[in-house]
Image 1: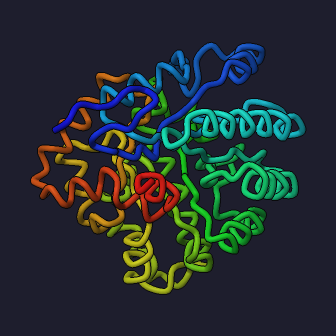
Image 2: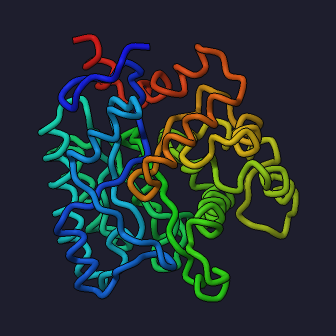
Length: 332
């Protein structure tokens, strides 16, 4: 395989990383001002810069990173202060994409739970900044994404046939259930599963089929729990609910899943039973996952018996269907 090109060029492998984060200085300063030196149960805030991201990407043969704001998003601020920070984040993300054509894409942050402000920010993000999609945390101040109050957000995403990247955050009860350990160990995959259950049983996913949803970390606990979740669709006292067990499996199979921290054959094997390879995307979770962890995950992916064609689909081709501008850039 040819060597990766420089920071300004394109790497030979051409991976599209749909799960990479950025922490602009003003965002880190806002966290510090709020007294947050760690987040989500003790996770240290990693250093971030565009140059460091590009250097890591070249070493790991990642051509393009779809960057987004990680947990806790803007949720650490009072609701009235979130819109201003979200706009600042989105302007910074768009500027990074413009400064490095082909190397970055961007998912916009919305000032949830303010629906009107979030719709306004979505319009600005798509129509002015030209973002690639939006990111929503799995819960907003303890309210999950299937809540009726959030239906206008999903209606607008559906109207735009937009890409929605889900990202876990700590549940409201984290202090009681976190076992004194950082949320990414257990509560992140569980909260991802929890919000997917809420979206399925509220029928938010089924009634908004044109949203291209990316689920992180190999689906969290979904591969292990999907059959159990589906079986409860048979219970008439649960209302609303999926129409059938089959609808649950069909809905989950059409979502997209990134493989951040999920390349191990045990996790990946479960994901392959949940969704076809056409729905699986590469993800790194850098910089919260350090580069050694990114490299380890890439190596583990190679242990799953995938064909060269399947590996290339996972690395790039599946993501090109979500982000056709990246396919067009490659042809230039």
